[in-house]
Length: 360
Image 1 (cartoon, helix red, strand yellow):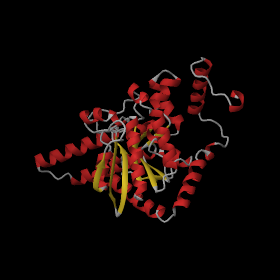
Image 2: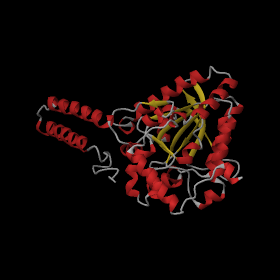
Image 3: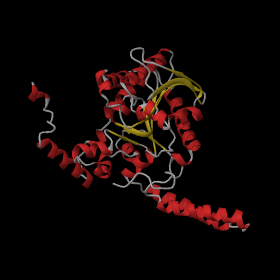
């Protein structure tokens, strides 16, 4: 498994060596131009054109594992960037009225464009202190209960809900399980499916497992171009099936977690374009693209009456997966996943679920 980042300050990923070389040449020519007073502008422009061409070539053919690396880039815009650049007059709301306030989920009201919205997002944290405070973006049950309480508040005052998903998964600690992690997520799924206001869900980075799904049920599901959304992280999948995290690359290919695959399967309704080279290279443009999608989609959803809104949401949720049920030959990564899963089942580590008729 390739390293997520190469040297040079962590700005570049392992598959961007050519970009590193070009940037080094541009920096050196810029330095020589200022030191020696020689005009290298023509050479610099030529290198910049070459850089753009390389970016287009690389990012047009990213593998699933490379997409995961881009989604996890340390400089990728996080929830705080979207709140600062996209949401006006943001007023944060705290607590679940049951246990406490989870820093991994941030809720509050504000304006996106001219629309007043309830924003609910998952916060990973930028520096070490903030990351620890919010469990690296892994919410506890009180986070999901807080989110649901604010959604009910939004429903009461007819305020649309916008959720920004960016989590490797729900927090797996013992305390979280003792306080009902699974139930908290399950209740959110049920309540969001029948909330009487428009709901827009957007995956802005990582969309891992039930942690993402806990605020991921809505009328529209969008995903940024180089984000991912999956039932489990590639490392988690590899650890379960092969007991070997180095097979994460194979797992990523088989999980069909990229925006293109999710859109093809009907899970994602829209793909939001990212700036050339990923959202981390132009945060303002990335946030602007998300803002425009939200404004445009809210305008469409607000035209529906409540009955049609709920019926369309129900039909949308029922239709998920139908395009994947038609038979087609398995790809090589999918065959490896299937074979590994069968071995785990045969070893008795996982018991396959029996049909309902057999159990009764």
